Amino acid sequence: MYPTGFVEPCLPTPSPAVPDGSRWAFELKHDGFRFIAHRDGGRVRVFSRHRKDWTDKVPAIVEAMLALPVTGATIDGEGVVTDDHGVTDFDRLRAALAERGGSRAPFLYGFDLLALDGEDLRPHPWEIRRATLTRLLRKASPGIRLSEHLDGDGETIFLHACALGAEGIVAKRRDRPYTSGRCADWVKVKNPAAPATTRIME
Image (cartoon, rainbow, N blue to C red; front, top):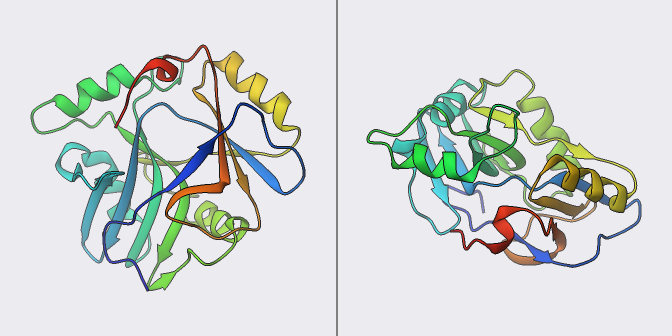
């Protein structure tokens, strides 16, 4: 069924070990709020993972969704604010979302495309959804940026992510569909030194 609004997000399974093998792709785990951004014609809504509507608080994300050359789309990603070095900063995000009328600082790191112009993409493998998202966001406005993925040795990528101060990494099976709820096809490995490790977030 084509998604017409909120979609329960896929939640990665925590793991102390990084998956290995060519079936896996790796992404930095950004420190922010999980957002599902949905556009239907001229209307955009931005939901948290628990269905809270943040649309009025994130105008840059809304404008970027409206600027995409499509009639409809549902993008899964992380709403973030970055510091002067480009590292995601949860405290800055929280302050921005608390501002009356919202803030233009938060943007969306899009990492999955669930639907596009009337087609439900969730049954397709990650690598197909990923390629379609990459094309879609090639000329996107600053309110949406592609969350880059990395190929190669997962352990090396994880150590590099920790050195950058990232929250960790998420490993994703290239050949699997998108599944709402907790799923073993996505595996998260947290940076033990990251602030999010000891913080309870939405």
